[in-house]
Image (cartoon, rainbow, N blue to C red; front, side, top):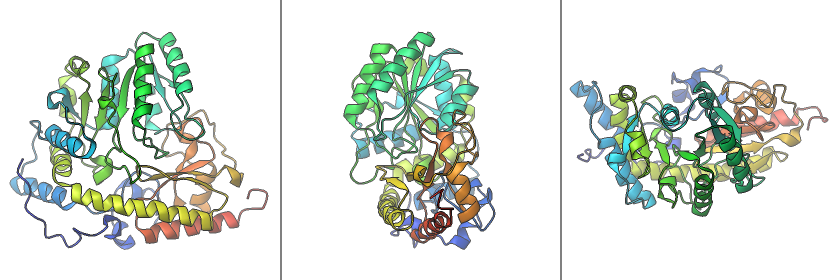
Amino acid sequence: MASPAPSADPTANRNPLTALTLDELRQRTSVKWRAHPSDVLPLWVAEQDVPLAAPVADALRRAIDLGDTGYPHGTAYAEALGAFAARRWGWHDFRVDHTTVVPDVMMGVVEVLRLVTDPGDAVVVCPPVYPPFYAFVSHAGRRVIEAPLGPDLRLDLAALDDAFHRARAAGRRPAFLLCNPHNPTGVVHRRDELEAVAELADRHGLRVISDEIHAPLVLPGARFTPYLTVPGAEYAFALTSASKAWNLAGLKAALAVAGPWAAADLDRMPEEVGHGPSHLGVIAHTAAFHAGEQWLDLLLDGLDANRTLLETLVARHLPAVGYHRPEGTYLAWLDCTRLGIATDVPADEPGVVSDLAGPARMFLDQARVALSSGHVFGTGGTGFVRLNFATSPAILTDAVTRMGRAVDALPSSAG
């Protein structure tokens, strides 16, 4: 694939998070900016407040100018991911022929589950975790078994061992759905942790499916390890895309990648699954992985600064709220349990992303800041909120300042 022509974009060397004003962002019609009234600052769903990276915008313009809006074809997407993975993560034995294009990561997860598990089989997840893990697994006719994270928000190997044992006892072909890096905690799993997961999965006979959609968003101080590069992951799968890193959720296309001994399973993917991805989506994601690294590096610098700013803001305005500094993603997991705000929905009904209760409901009503409610992330989520800090420092500062004023106004019994 030829490199795109140099862009004349005046924001090419700027922090993407400062490129758009609040007034410009409010003109957007996506769910982040239209789900709530205009006086609300939306820091909930995983959309970034950034313009398109110039190489992505250029590739889309070329396609539109050519009327290139038909069906996707070829392996350029996988080739771009493979080259990116080699440069960024040292994954030098990435196999393009062990991939297939799927509509998006979660649809890919479901289709892989259908290949390697049976209806009624158990799928292990590590809560608090991305709510659609619950909804998609359940809708696919499989049942969820939880292996909660440890108090340090890292994988708890003893809990995994127990959950894997129960999953094996519950069905013929169980699986483990890994979130790597982890959403909502921002933890980036270490290689030794992933090697231990692979050993446990092999011992108990579970197939591992790793959601790696946040993989490009690892911040300074941590290093991403693709699950398929660890010993023992030969029968596993990974799902990824450029969606989260380059803000391409509306341009549908993702890749399912099989370990060397799982490629035959991926070959059984129904042909019609490949009809779901958008051709423009494939073009956009390919351009991001192929030519979007300069933009990504500027974004990562901005996110690194924002996570430090958020730490300062929480300490100043929300001293009773716990802040676990994320290693990756642009998501912060805030512990609001000391605020004493009741969560008035069952904690055992995760998965409905739009549900609001407890602290998230209070911050929306009293501070006009929209956050994701912790209870939808499963066990361990009640009393927490997830905050998306992929926005400008000015919006982030305004939001946390509002949140602090709302907490200060709480009755003393709740504070």
